[in-house]
Length: 343
Ligand code: SF4
Image (cartoon, rainbow, N blue to C red; front, side):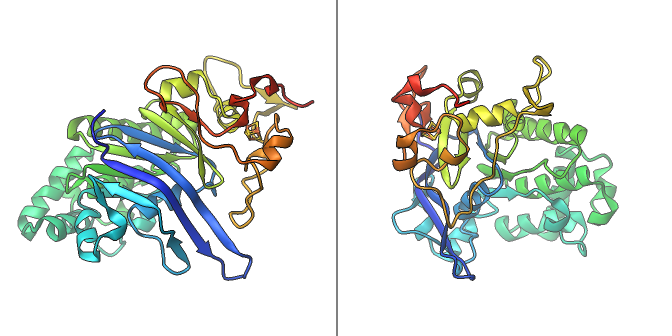
């Protein structure tokens, strides 16, 4: 295997809450790697730590109240981002690692044209002149599939639809040809047809530009067609990690099973309970009060005493590939006969 582009090891990002209700352990010992050119999907409900993970990678956590705990490691091309000087970090952020967010209207500045906003990154990071950067902005608008880019470059965000604004955001993120794009719920605010177009666009650009993508979403359906591997997060931890095909064919963590059962499928009738689509009962607990033992136990249909008392480590699930290719944080791996849901 090649050297990973990004290596995250035992990342812990905590927040001290103002209400004095304790420390929120939003990300609590997360490890994963992203290889050059691959797409890693990070999936989980809101509140499970996905976004805090991505903001930690870019060191965009507001400190205080947040802090990344000593012992955490975030390496990009072998350099520990957590020990870089602010100047060195700025040279990486937006240039070699770029990010797009869920809501393009709040991420774009309403008082500047989209062309100026795309050009700005190229001027700041690559030292281009205004004239060259404007040409680059037009090229980016064309690359992301916006018609009449020579005209659109002078438009303001409010003159564009939501789907076009998200394309502009992607153009802005890619103008410096980053090696890693972090896309945080890039399609959630868009309607379904536009969602599919944006995902297709990301796939195409990834193939053309050879960048790696971290695709963060609450929707397993979004990663199904796009990601090479998937890390499922729950309560600040990775609970299952596997190549996408293996995860869909053989989900082993009960939380992953629940997420998969909530994805509507065309080839099979949806699982229904009392006439509703299957969903996981309950909610992600507050990050100030993760349950003892396995953090999923209050919502898990298989939980037994051991689950309530002992936190399972990430266990190797075997299967195809090298050891550690498919890992699962669940005691069912050691006691498979327990896989009988309680009535
Ligand atoms: Fe469920 Fe126990 Fe596995 Fe946790 S360890 S997911 S509670 S079976």
